[in-house]
Amino acid sequence: MSKYILAIDQGTTSSRAIVFAQDRSIAGVGQKEFTQIFPQDGWVEHDPEEIWESVVWAVRTALDDAKITAQDVAAIGITNQRETTLIWDRATGKAIHNAIVWQDRRTAPYCAQLKKDGHEELVTDRTGLLLDPYFSGTKVKWLLDNVAGARARAEAGELAFGTIDSFLIWRLTGGAAHVTDATNAGRTLLFDIAGNQWDDELLKLFDVPAALLPEVKDCADDFGVTEAALFGAAIPILGVAGDQHAATIGQACFTPGMLKSTYGTGCFALLNTGAEMVRSKNRLLTTIAYRLNGKTTYALEGSIFIAGAAVQWIRDGLKLVKHASETGPLARTADPSQNVYMVPAFVGLGAPWWDAEARGAIYGLTRNSGPAEIAKAALEAVCYQTRDLLEAMRKDWGESGQTVLRVDGGMVASDWTMQFLADVLDAPVDRPKILETTALGAAWLAGSRAGVWPDMAEFAKSWALDQQFTPSMDAATRQAKIAGWDDAVQRTLTR
Image (cartoon, rainbow, N blue to C red):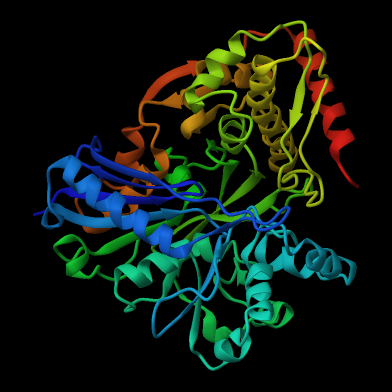
């Protein structure tokens, strides 16, 4: 019996494929970056064909790296950048427009009008989300309204909508499966997360034809089988979850009260609330953490739009470093007497502010400020934003006791950043041995469904700590730094 599991991690800036052995060790990796397209201020797009080609390349590279063939793979698990929106032709599989990325803010005026008209309460009640351009629903409407002939073709059943997972599954299965999972469906503004179904009232509000929609499945389910010609043999797709949900699973946050934060392009913190849908009073999101065997587990989520993307900007935009990994060592050399703050609102501010019109700013610059101070401010901004999320979660969740945060994603490899995070949170930060927790979560969904990986309880036992970072900053320093951050945010907000 095949023992390997292949995880496809289709992210915002790159596509990765990771082959996991039965003991959960990494046997092979393939990764390829792709183009970020910025047509206008606040607009972000991806080329669907480039994404598809990068995924196929990454899978083939990972199989070669692991020195195995597709016949050795028991199942595929897929995890993806959430909310990024595609509509494609059912006959050809070709997208009718570039993918509109989750970071894109082009529908901000429409969201503002819907709020003004009093629709946010309905949307939040059904979906747990807010009326913000971040989510898929308004992006779908924009595509239907702005691509010639799209609405008529959608109503005629000629087109299909999906987030990246749906598009990849459609392509992988040769158009045989138009499906998604509950976590991705729950981020569209079109899905009732209590009833676990597409919502007719929301479809009417956003003017989205039901004929566009994929079938919604559990996170561990039968999503179809890849065409044999792609990789040399047909492989069943048995697990799907949006990236933050997959990371929650990969971090084994299966118990209510457990908390994880992923630091990729953005930063997303999820607090497991079990079967209870906790309604936030602090502008957090209520979301589906995962759905297994028909049973839904919910979470509170805080979303930060820019985390690693700020480091990418320092590398590619300002060209202060050649490699992202250089920012931590550079930050260590910053002048400690300078109080430089970066508010990375490049595409607006997410939770708990939700200001779509805000834009990035740097405060506290002096003649002596240089690359080190800017790098330090970018890394610190991620930590300050995480603190804002955790403070809001504590108010909503209402549980006492110290929070331990499990972290993952590319940025957590920086010891300097993780120590500052623990300091500013005044709480321990646990970094696992396996940092690829998003891919690991997708792999567990597929592997457990295939019967080659352990059940939830045994998988949770295998979670292993690499290093715990504990607070060492004195209270006065912490409060002074947080006060400076709060002042910088207030200066950046547009409302």
